[in-house]
Length: 490
Image 1 (cartoon, helix red, strand yellow):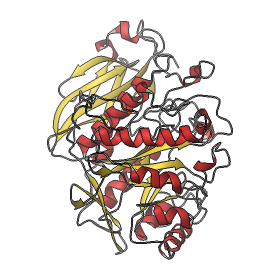
Image 2: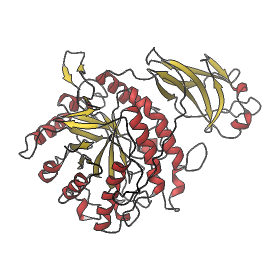
Image 3: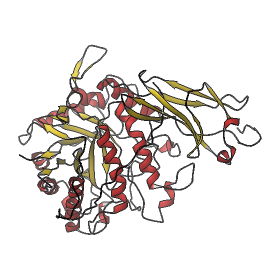
Image 4: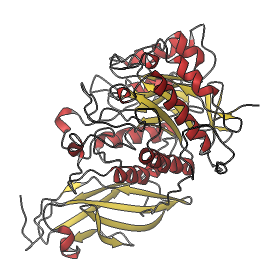
């Protein structure tokens, strides 16, 4: 915000909704601006939260003796679908959850909010959330769905902003920074003309300020280089006009930091760098991790550059050689840290993972938990780099057919935790709730009414660490059992 002059328990999170959804400038009739807990500021090349640099004092020391400062960086992830919905009835049915066979935008947001504390425990201090989402398949060639927090005239859709409010409130509670993206190519065409685009920008920025959020920074649009943008003002040549528009909006003397992004591997143009408060980079398609270093160096060498943070907030495959993986050398994440640039992971379901619900953070429907090996590897490296405790890993094992037994495995995470409860969730309903951790669980302890028909099962652990409630879940499994008569189904 710019001010000018290990182990187990589940949280029930209270959502606070602010009183006003505003589309115009402040009037005397508006309610008081809420007080917030988290304030982001920029000091030179560093992000600060509540007056102190992020990861204060943290240096990442590698196994081969390298030392790299982390203080002031904004480690993040692309989690843009937190308020996703599809207003096109012809396409809405393709986003249904595997357990309930219906799409539910409020469930999507609820599960996002539930997972946030576990991300924070791994050192994730920032994430990108988009008012027009992103491709719900990861990459798209067409956009027949209608996912936009903006109505055609640029006004704000209340249902979207209520969901955004829940996420921003929780981020404020957790001390997290939200990179709030406004427009996405393929979706910007739902806004009728350039004046409506400007109106949408003014409405979004004013809404953030009136609701008192001091932990939000703005990304005008995702990849202004995209030819799919309908409106010229959202393309690279003119998008700086919208950056300045955001910066000039004030409520009670407060304004917002703003920037925008280009396609993967591209260096932001001078007109964008000159007006931005921080510089966004995308690493998609970068074949050689050394290019990540070169991009950061080229930005800092620009005549229009002044000391400000660099943030890579979208990088889909951090390596092109599988042998590099998530290790200490060779991938884009590590390369960004070494050249003092924040990094953000863009995870989506790959073509051969289309029906694997546990994969990806962008493909709809999303499992927002750390529910795949790929997610876990990212978060483990993040925890290592930022010196964070991480969370336990939970898994269910269905391999023991005798007695229809489910084995529960939990590994890692901090030791100084207070366990609240363990739940077994079947088809999105709690089937078993325990207040101690069993070594195994038998199916005959489960309510068979809940288990009827095809069923999906996951374990959910709620615990408290340092006064913060954290929810961790196992992957969501399609059970191999038929629930009646104790018959195993292969």
